Length: 158
Image: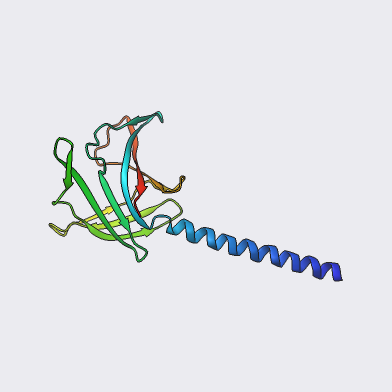
């Protein structure tokens, strides 16, 4: 009888410890996106799975996302003004909300400041495999037939 009680207590301790660890892991995974992110590399992935660096990035920080805990999202797009000089695109300054759907799926609802039009962005997946970096896979409107998807690597600013 004492052995049964001891085993029951041991099982409860293991279950409670696992549950607390799992809750902490989920919180940190959910909050990994919180902060300011700048695009540092952009790649194109072909249908055969090969990766090709996209050489069309003229601005060192092409995009900047800021995700807040309260679900607020701001997005800044940079454009090339002169050779080797980039400025914030004044025609595209959206503000909106973000929501986590599943482990790697998010949805962004952005409203453009200039015309109040709504853009709903649903990346294919967002991952955080290396600390301080976020990878976002996505498709674009009118993606060529030989292209599977694109992805951008972001560096966390703060």
